[in-house]
Length: 137
Image 1 (cartoon, rainbow, N blue to C red):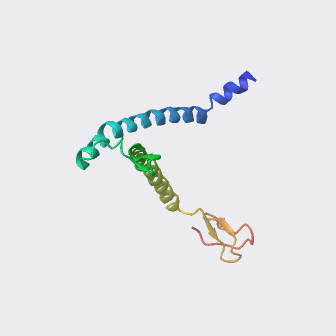
Image 2: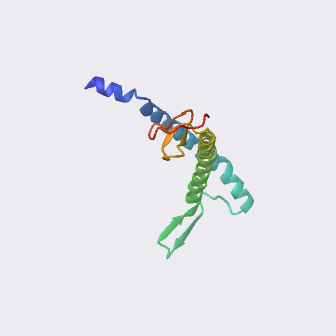
Image 3: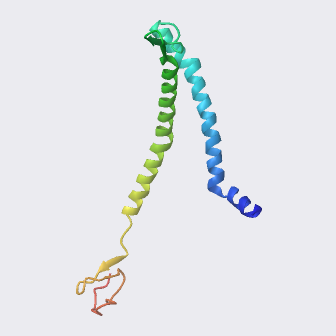
């Protein structure tokens, strides 16, 4: 049982996933700090309304809604989504597009027999299905 667990843990995709989670968490911390320490002060400096983080409104003197913290989280989400889109999704789409183009430019290795319309090798001089004589390639 311990050997099976060891094989499972040391499989490539499990290790890759663990690394991705750790890097993602570290990246999230960096983005949160960027928003909290740089972007929020810039927004509050331009808007001249004071601190964006402490932005709130009350309804019926009982319900307090803190929209400032929500805006910080929303800005962080947009930054993370943009980074993932531009640095992960877009390059992978380009690579898939290039791979698809390469597959499309390969010359076919088969042709159709003019007599029976079966798929045969392009180099064949006689059809394997109907035995008709073919022109040399």
